[in-house]
Amino acid sequence: MTASDDIHEASSEAKIRSQPPDVIVSVGSGDEKREFMCYKVILSFASNYFDTMLSSSMKEGTSSRIDFPNKDPGEWEEFYEFIAPRKVGQSQPSAKIHSGNVETLIPWFHEFQINYYLQDCDVYLS
Image (cartoon, rainbow, N blue to C red):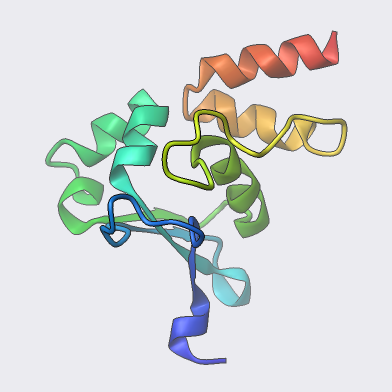
C-alpha cells in the first residue's frame, strides 16, 4: 500500500467547481487510522460545529486538518455520506437512514449538532 492509498477522497465522484478537497480528516489510530480528503465548505454548511472549528483560529482551521483518533473510520465514511452530495448540485444525499445504520449515526449527528438528521433518526425509530 502506498502513502496515496492511505488517503481516501471522500467525494471522489465530483469535485466542487473543479476545486480540490481542502481539509484532511484523520479518523482512528494505529493500523486502523485512515485519512479522508474533504471539503471545508461541505463540513461547514452541514454543521455549526465544523463551521466554528474551520472558520476560526482553532488549529483545525489554520492547519486544514481535523483529527478524530478515537473514532471509527468506517463510521466516519458512513456519516460523511449524509452530508456530502455525491454529485455537485444534488440536493439530497444518496445515503438513507435504515435499521443497519441508525444506531451508529445517532451519536455522530448528535456530536456534530446535525439536528435535521437526528429528527430523521427519531422518526425512523418511532
